[in-house]
Image 1 (cartoon, rainbow, N blue to C red):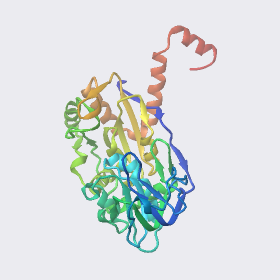
Image 2: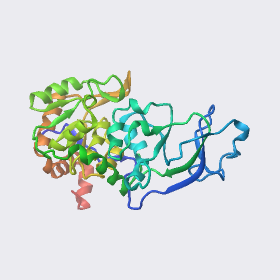
Image 3: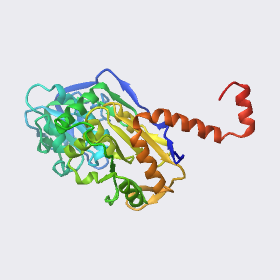
Image 4: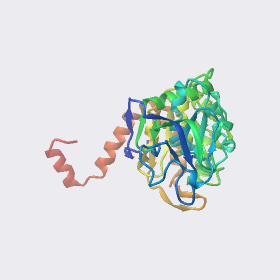
Length: 360
């Protein structure tokens, strides 16, 4: 096997695991103040404390001088914070405040969010909420100061590039299990490659991905466009395929909803890996193996945060297919390649010093 792919060993960020549940606060007779100018949206208790426990900057919870205060429905409201409209940002942001639904008692809540997004326009939201008996119509926002009789303020169960509480694993399993129930797990041996070639905008783009796609297709890999699938269909694909490939991106986070123990081969634009990938992989026992193609180039790209390219799409495709066939042996192979790469990078003097110190 050639040495085109270098295993990503350095993680950018933290991947802490926390056994205890996040903090949760219940406020009765709360006042929610929407954004005015540059002031943030703020849920506040009658004593003037903000959702994080800090006092508002000189603002009284009595808003009589600021105009009338509306009243919310007399049912519980669960505070979500900002509603992320990007699929990946939703999974590492907004989703982490849904964990109280796992053990919810009493009337179903309204889900209070910040922002101007239309929840009904987010295709992934309905299937996520369905398992809790909720719909996007239960996701609400207020455009004026509003008094809420019963407001639940959870700390998030996952914070991107930082930590995940154990309850977040329960959350994604509960959401995803109905999607793959009845699927023959690992029943399809042909790998699937998740392509971004049909995306007009996003975080990153592999500029010569069509060449890589074609090389993979010639080797029997199925090319899949995640944006054309509903969330349950994508979860089923992860569950039934023995190996899923692609460039690192939000679609890989879907494995957290799938059957445990997924196998992922990811191409990463840099030798260092965003911590969100191992952080979410750890929720469901996903075995993510992420590689940086040697000699990759990156830079600005219209419609994306950046674009990048691999120098040898044909060779990278061949290595991906070989690695998919021997996925369970990759740990030993990658260690061997790492050692060989380090040895090749040492000069004669470094090698002699290593031998004197008894190091390989």
